[in-house]
Image: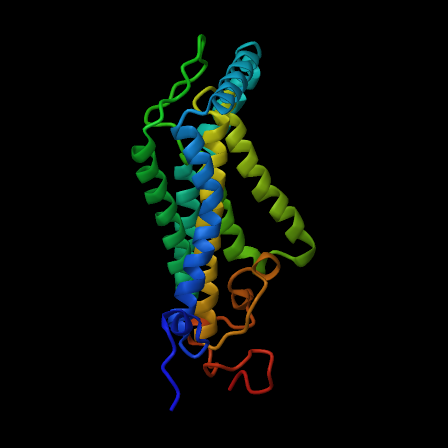
Length: 271
């Protein structure tokens, strides 16, 4: 008579898919949250070397922007009209409407959940840490609310990430590296504007970046498991996007006639 598996055995049993996946998701979240936790602890304990770095960079960049009015206007335009979180929310909402009409309902749920989760986490953590914004001698810009983590930097990662991972199948393969460069450049650019304008410290924007990557990694992993449960093949999201079927091969991936547990590339993957 065989003994029943222990708690660890049950959680890692491949036949118990839900338990296994929830365990792996929790481990991935824990590993991904470690860098953010370390950074947050250093900020919360006011570690002097980090605070000195924050203060020096913010002051130097603010002074440089103040001495170059043309750059000041350019950075203000970029942060308020190009890389503002509401701009990304609007773009994702428009994309979700188009995807819903196209029938990619699963992708819509993922995109909306990722943006909502990013917004809620950012707002919650600001109230947890209540870090004041930089207090500079001659500020060139002001912003309300708490400083850590930067909501602009957080949405600057999640917004372009959601748009890119959802729409990547529609981008010609030769152009996909350039799309990635544009997305990464946008995330770096918005972070630079926030520090240069004196409304965030470097650690604020780094915290926003790390948190944004955690959100994208976790929600994308859950989405991939969702695909596999629907009988769709595994994909390399960084190369193919999360739902390659929206490129037109399967105009309605939500009702594609694929038997659960089969591979799309196998001869029996479709009816």
